[in-house]
Image (tube, rainbow, N blue to C red; front, side, top):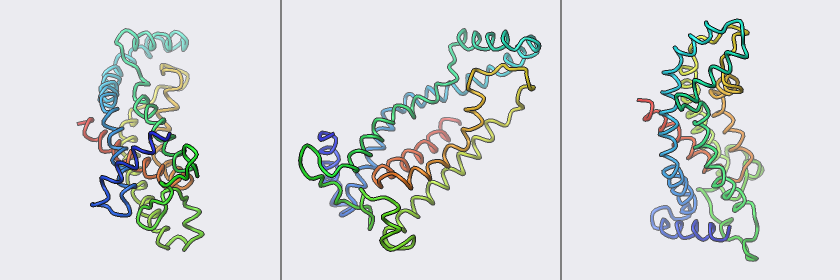
Length: 236
């Protein structure tokens, strides 16, 4: 973690002439962008997987008609179809999963008072009036919701809510296809529930921003906004 701390400090030093006291926050945004660029090839592959999945829907509908009275055989046939066409219905999860280590690094980095036996100097950095190692509850206790630090969080909440609304509407459009008849099956195990929940996931980011250190929240907000813009571009 000390190596990662030095990376953030070096990035902050480079950005200080432009962002002054918020240089470390800008470094986290830049770091997030670098992580997203690294996983972009997987995001492109996930977008191709979603298009391939959509292209399989007529054939899956035919399998539903063919095996309407045998749900087990139907499920097996759908799995075989995915394997034969080399389409993974869960490939879209990979970009998010690969970002988790970076998020947890930031979380621990800005939750630890010491690094390598020395005081954690990063905890003194701020995003405007809000300490990067602080939480929303700290901002509420120091000036309230509309205090200097509270306004920083309100800005982040507004960004998250806007992105979540866009993602929700896009997700509802993607899942607007008529569902399979009850008892017909034909879904990859667990995929149906994941598809129904997916449009709401972005709203859970509001909870994350409220409970994690501000540095980790900034990573989540930046990554979520990047993901929304990336999906919009890749879906064209």
